[in-house]
Length: 113
Image (cartoon, rainbow, N blue to C red):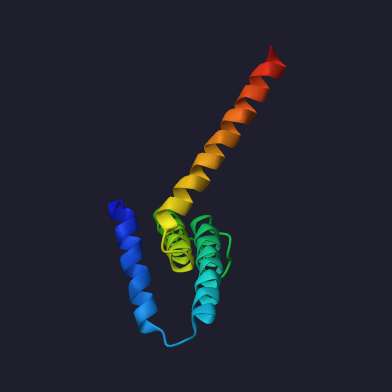
């Protein structure tokens, strides 16, 4: 397990230990947390572009980066809480994405010839 996934496992374990809710509710709330964090990305983008007339330029692009990181971490923690083998699940998923991209690239190459 990589250092990142070890950290994610530690975070997930802390959250599990903290909650007294049934497992199903804990997972549902963790999944909802992804949406909450995505909303914070949207808020930061609006603030970085100064599109809220009441707040002006309330965020920086570094704030946006930090919020995107929060979305990623929250998603990784959610996956770990769903499945203790999250690192393997994610690796397999990435392999599938790469294979799909390779297929798409080969199809484009064939069509362009």
